[in-house]
Image 1 (cartoon, rainbow, N blue to C red):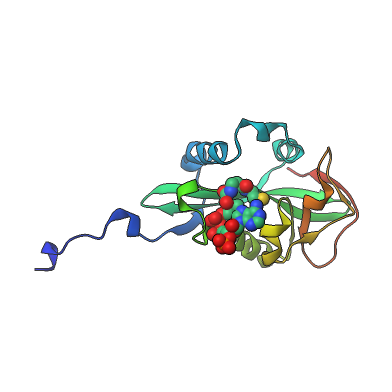
Image 2 (image 1 turned 180 degrees about the vertical axis):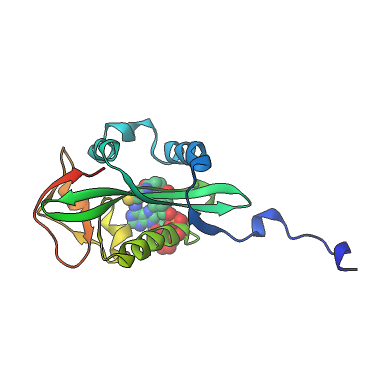
Length: 165
Ligand SMILES: CC(C)(COP(=O)(O)OP(=O)(O)OC[C@H]1O[C@@H](n2cnc3c(N)ncnc32)[C@H](O)[C@@H]1OP(=O)(O)O)[C@@H](O)C(=O)NCCC(=O)NCCS
């Protein structure tokens, strides 16, 4: 009898935050390209990511489709090891539903697990709610708007950011 009940529409399926797998790479690349355009490859943050190892990566998945993505990269600032967050992107039709917050929270939880701080280059207007603060003495290895260099962690370090493998 219950087999005859209508199935829920696909767009009502729950969105899940999961660890990114190698099979997700193409979908993540397409999502990030759509969100930022090809211009992001010119950015200092992208130069840093090219040199750094991935510490963790998460996707938001709905009905098997990747609709959100964030990555964490291994870095150090002076003597302090940390993780560099980005890029973070949510598919345009899925925004403003809390998915971005869920992806940031997955990163914050991952960092909290081993007591690591998080650095990113982004909008304070979005990231302040997660405990990020402007880091005036953290120097990126290239041109960047210093007001967008944000840190979440106990003590803000002083020094140049470098990639770790
Ligand atoms: C930023 C992004 C990941 C947020 O994803 P999301 O799933 O919409 O995020 P949430 O649902 O958790 O939060 C949405 C809220 O953040 C706000 N917000 C989004 N981007 C913002 C920004 N750059 N600055 C300030 N607020 C921002 C939205 O207006 C919305 O506000 P509301 O809740 O009052 O309506 C998504 O907008 C995106 O992919 N943008 C393009 C890529 C990008 O710019 N990424 C880096 C951001 S620095």
